[in-house]
Structure formats: structure tokens, C-alpha cells
Amino acid sequence: MKIPRKIDDRLKDAIVNVQFVPGIPAAAVWGYFHQLFQHDLAALPVFVPFQRLNLALGGMQIESQMPPPFLTQDQRFRIDLSGEAISFNLLSGYPGWEEYRQTLERFLSPLFANKLIGQVQRVGVRYISRFENVRIFDKINGIVQLNVVPSDARGQVRLEFERSSFTSVITLVSGFPPAPGMEASYFSLIDIDIIKIYPADNSLTYENIFDDLETAHNLQKDSFFSILSEPFIEELNPEY
Image 1 (cartoon, rainbow, N blue to C red):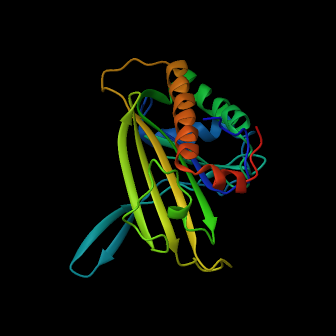
Image 2 (image 1 turned 120 degrees about the vertical axis):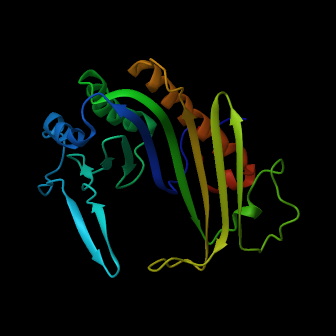
């Protein structure tokens, strides 16, 4: 099928996640990241890692404080970082994959070069689209149409399968009540997560990982448009 270059933006999340074994002590990753990119990031409150005691009745629990997210200087992207994973997500409208890719390159390449990322264990590309006042079970392609589900039903369907060495996890949520602050009577979601897990003894380079992120994005996009019926795609004002 012909895949549109652009449609009306219904994306609420576009998450790129890389899980890794750090090449430096995990506790130092956050601080080194801030030092590397302090001129590319919006101002943040000072973070001092510490463990917090939670004195509960009948025992004591030690909790680790999570670091705050980073924001890019233009405040278009959010970056969540721990000692073993980094995730990127949108803060405003989707800029298109090319601009998103440039942002990923700007941050990921120095992380490899400076050994903050020692060995990658997993990558994932997850896009979540929300459709207000749409029952998505009415709008999907006949190949995946669920004839056993009434079109006006509220429900959720999850599909998981292997494709080109990636795991695809597709979740369709249809006809759910609106969240607080939403003006819609109901909404639906299409949640597509494309994942690749690597062997523990891999020696993959930055270029290998970025090629896989590119492939994951393409698989996500292909899955999204394969799910939707052609009449519904036309409702989204596609540009080819």
C-alpha cells in the first residue's frame, strides 16, 4: 500500500527508548549527561541523588529518588535518563521523523563516543495516537477487522508477533470514556511498540543501533497504516 508522508497529527506520545549497560558507574550517568549537554538543555533544578527513608508502620523501606527529566533547549522534547536507560518523547506536536532523528543523533552519538552507553540491551520505538469521538474498531482494515466485536463496544485488543527480528506489540483501545479535561464523549487509541532485544554478548556499534531505530520506526509506520481502513485514512487528510 502507498503510505502517506503526513496526516493530521493525532500523536500523543512518540517514545524512543534505549536500554544499556553503562560504560561508567551507573550512578554517574545522569551527572555526566548533564555536563555533556548543558548547553543543549533547558535549565533544570539541581538534582542531588540520594536514598530516602520511608518509615512505615511495622518496618522501614528505602526508596531511591528518581531524577527529574531533561528538556531540550527548545522545549520540544523530554529526555528521561537513568543509569541504564534513556527515553525520548514529545512535549509538543510531532515534528516529523527527520527532525526527531536529528535530535536522537545529537544526544545518542556523544553517549556512545564518551562511553556512557557501553553495550545496548534493547531498543524500542513506541507511538501512541488518540482519536476523539472515534470507535477504532469501526475504522480498521478488513484484514484485521474483529467481526466478533460489536462496533459500538468498548474494549481493548492486543496483538504481539515477531517481524524482521523485531517484536511488534499493537494495542487497540476503542470507545473509552474521556479522561478529565477532554471535551470528547469517548476516545480510542492505537498504541504500537516495536522492540528489539540484543544478545548479552553483542558488540554492536552506534551505527548498528541507529539503523535498528530507523527500521523500528519504519515498521511502526507501516503497521499503523496497515491497520487503518482506506476511508478512515482519507478522513485524516493524507499528504503523499
